[in-house]
Image (cartoon, rainbow, N blue to C red; front, side, top):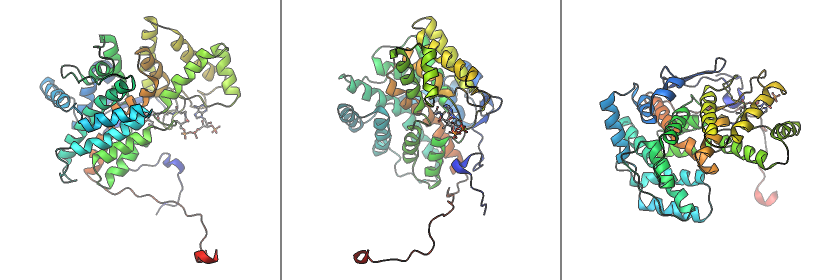
Length: 382
Ligand SMILES: CC(=O)SCCNC(=O)CCNC(=O)[C@H](O)C(C)(C)COP(=O)(O)OP(=O)(O)OC[C@H]1O[C@@H](n2cnc3c(N)ncnc32)[C@H](O)[C@@H]1OP(=O)(O)O
Ligand SMILES: O=C([O-])CC(=O)C(=O)O
């Protein structure tokens, strides 16, 4: 038994994985050996899902069959739609609605009785979850706008179809490609908090619906996926402030505010995904409003130069530039974290399956620091 206490499990090895690897000093991320830059520029989200779930990049035939199989599973039940409507009417948040939707998907699972050890069945269930998440999320947004949900279009890829179901309009190529790229960038990232949560659930041989629901719950927090929404809220706060954006960031840091989208447990340098998203944000700014790009680059420059955060290893993470990209694509701010979940579900499912191939219940210990010899006193005598 090891008695060293590693708070937050920092640096603790708990599993082997072939899925993704991060070099936090070099700012390098690979999925199954492929640099994230190559996948983001050359592949589609469906290809990346196939890679994560099947171990190799698909050829054309494999990709066509996989894409069709995913598109065939996009419909969600009337019960899920009715629940999305009720939650939208009640003013619930889309991340909470998504958590509920994924939990409900299991009610219409055709292989619900499959043996927990049947990992092929688990993969098919995972494919159904991944296909249905965009439909449930888009339906929630439509209900919130007082509109009817839009049926998925099987001829569109997962990214373009989501934007179509959100707005009712087929996205242009720039929007579809940018969004697809964002999904690729968020698909997997080692044993981050939400992936580890899914793995802990999967290690009990609970079903994949439970594992993905748990992943969504862990991702929702502001220290994890919730930061992308917080970044955009900060940018809007800057925009509405009487202060110039440089003055705003000076004042915020003087007040000791932590800027969301900065810092990472693994990276000591700028996240490679932030670099790609920054390029997208700059391109969108060149064809639209440039103030969001200006605000983000000013914050980054100020924190690096004046506060010396870069020397301390605190640099922009994936959440820092994604917010302004989604904003420029016209996506509502509280959908950013659910979109992260839409993509990361692929990684959660891949990790659960990989772990279950050689499963061992995950069960760490806490160092007990409470009293040893408390004397029990009956209720009526206390
Ligand atoms: C998809 C993702 O999950 S990426 C992360 C998304 N989350 C955010 O962007 C929220 C803002 N960032 C943070 O809160 C943190 O950087 C985390 C939670 C991501 C990582 O935290 P940890 O590895 O636990 O580091 P911890 O919170 O202990 O911070 C270490 C040091 O860096 C500082 N620091 C960390 N993040 C920031 C930040 N955003 N701004 C200013 N200082 C920071 C801390 O104050 C601390 O300094 P100290 O040692 O002088 O006290
Ligand atoms: O890896 C982490 O700790 C956070 C995460 O999920 C990511 O950066 O994508």
